[in-house]
Length: 559
Image 1 (cartoon, rainbow, N blue to C red):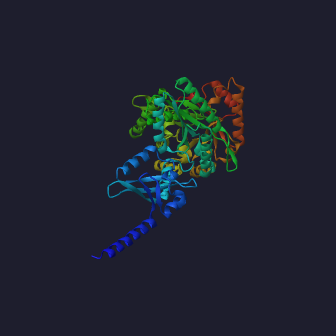
Image 2 (cartoon, rainbow, N blue to C red; image 1 turned 135 degrees about the vertical axis):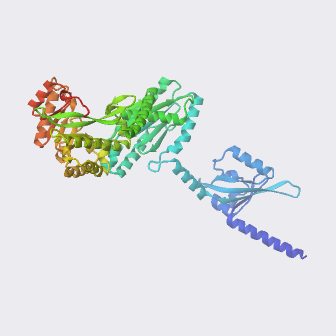
C-alpha cells in the first residue's frame, strides 16, 4: 500500500468536501464553550458581519430574540450530551433584519471522547418561512380589509374566554352588520361596496382599544371582541353599552365613496360572558341571535342577548320547518276581500294568504311571511298563490256575474326581482288559460329603490302580456313623484293607516285628498283600503275616491 498516496487523496477529498459544503451551506465552528472559531463566507454574507467581527464571539451576536431561553437550553443540552441537534432558528442580521436557517449542529470529540468543537451547518430558508408566514396570514386574515377573519377568531376567542374566566372579568361579543348593504351594492356597484367595507373596518379599528379585536366574519358582518372588562356585571354592561353606542354613532357618520357622500347605519347584537360558562360557538350564536332580533325590530339599533330572544327564534325555526311541510300538504289557502265602487258594486277581490296550521289553526301572513321572505321559499309561495288565484279566475269565468272580476295578488320584493319572474308568471297564466287582464299585481314602494330601470322593464313586459299593476300601502314610504311618473302603474292604494284617523284628524284627511288629487293628475285610479264604517265610506266618496276595500264591505272569506 502506498501510504503517502492514500493520505494525499484523502486530503484532496476532504478539501473537495469542504468546498462543496461551503458552496451550499452556511458553516460555523465553535469550541466547546460556544466561542466562534471559524465561519465561512456564506455565514458572513447572511449575517452581514465580517469574519473579524465574528471571531472570538458567540452566536448571541445574531440572536433575534424570537426563541425563548428554554429553546436554547434544550439545544445546548442535546449537543453537550454528544447528540446531533436539528431544527429551525431565527437569527438577526447586522442591519436588524431577521432570517431563518435550517440548522444541523454536530458535536465533535477528540480521541479521549471529550467535546472539542461544534460544527453548525445551515441552509437559508427565509423565503420559505416568509412564504409560510404569508400563507398563514392570508389564511387567518380577510383579504379585503386586512382584519382577522373567522378562522383567526376561533382560536383567539377561546383564549379570551379562558383568560377572562381566570381573571373573573367580563368580556363581550359585539356582532354588527350594515343595514341594507345589498342596496348599496345594487345601486353603486360592488367596488363601492368594497370601499365602504374597507372604510368601515378602519373606523372600527381606530375606535377599539388595542387589547380588543375587530374581526370580519364575512360579507358586511363584523365582530368586535371585548376582553378584561369589569368583574361586576352591571359595570361591565355599562362599559359595553358605552363602547357599542360610540361605535354605532361612528358608523352612522356619512362615508365618502367614489366622490359621493353615502349614508348608512348598523345593527348590533351583543353577548356578554364570564367564568367560562359558555363555549365560543354558543357565545357567537347568542350575539347572532341578538343581531337577528335587532334587524327584525327595524334595524339601526343595539340589543343585548337574553333568553327570551333565543326562545322566540326557536319558535320561529320550528314554524319555518312546519311551513316547509305545509307546502307539501297543501295547507295554504286564499281568502278574498272584496273591492267595490262608489255604488258598492263588486269590481274584484284581493287575494289574501292564509295558513291552516294543524296545531295553531288559521294563521295570518303576519305570523309567518317575514320568515318566509328571508328564504328561497318565498318564490315557491308566490307562485303557489298565483296558481290558486288563476284557479279562482277559471271558476269565476263560468259565472256571468263574476266573469269580469279582477283578482289582486301581492308580490314580494324577492319574487319580483327574480330573473325568471316574468317567464314563470306567463307560464302559470297560460297553464290555466285565464285572461291576464283580470290579474293585478300589488307592489310596494320599497321594491323600486334598488333598481328602478329593471323594475320598469319587468313591469312593461307583463303589462304587454295584459297584467295590471297597483302600488300598495301608498303614503307610508318615501313616496317620490318621479317614481309615480316613471312607473307604468294604473292604480294607487291608500294605506289603511290614514283611514283610522281621517274622521278626527284633519291631517290624515288632507293626505288622503292630496293622494286622490295626485292620482287624478297622473291618470291613476285610487283604492282606499281599511274602511270600517259608513262615515269613512261617505267622506271618501265626497273626497273623490272611487274604489273601496275594508271590513265595512265584508271580511275576507273563501269561495
